[in-house]
Image (cartoon, rainbow, N blue to C red; front, side, top):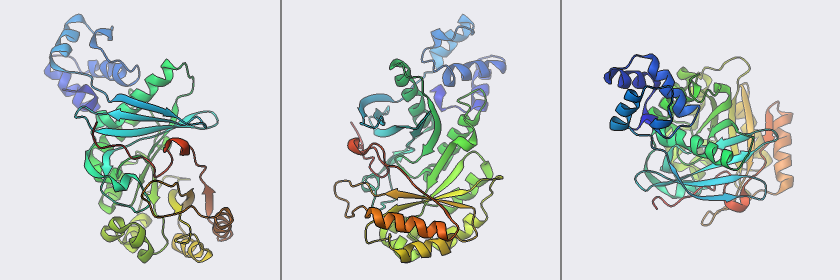
Length: 344
């Protein structure tokens, strides 16, 4: 039994099965998530008898670091090995006074978006809670070893995989992240990015455990089908937008729409105006993302003047639009560039 795969309630039940009182779950939970403990012998406020029981019936198994790359801008990319030899990547992105961590949730991705390196890998399998949240623990240990005082303050599920196609483990992970005895992240500090799996969106909205970002990238169904064939084919744009109209939002909360600018494909003034019409009246913010080249992808980055013109049209139409700054380009750690081999 890998204890990092248990919810808090499952931890209570597991320890109850060992004849322990319920409050022990809180103690073990804090050792695992807040103190990053990797050995039962270090859990010093537990009795020697309980530590002996845990040694005989459980383990603490995390991803392992296979390689680390650091960008000139301070971005750090980790290649992590999982227990079955599968490989995934996670990225620490430096901000002014904190770090943002980009998390993966699948080994590969089944969506096949034509502009994304991860999408060209196909899907090997879903990740489990210990592998998803283990990315945070492993990166945190590395930062401590380097003597860094900054820690991840924001988490974005924008790494490898489509989160809502791993809804069960995503939801379990989000609940653990929000737990006050665990990693204790505010839901406003966690963003889940999805192409828009409608059944998953409905469940995610009901949970209230995170902020939402939609990988849109096109203002019409026809264009979306051209560059995101799997997403557009399974979740037509009109049905997706209707679902988002029903999505429960907290006060002052907005949905972020991610829009990757591809030269000559989706970056003209006409596309900007169509996007403004699509999002009119919605509680929306648009993240404009520069295209980051990867081997085998058929696109080019938009001209800077075209980007500024696109952004201005959105502002003129009353939409908040922000141009995301690219980080980690020199180590292939920027948006859309993550592509680990599926196995070691």
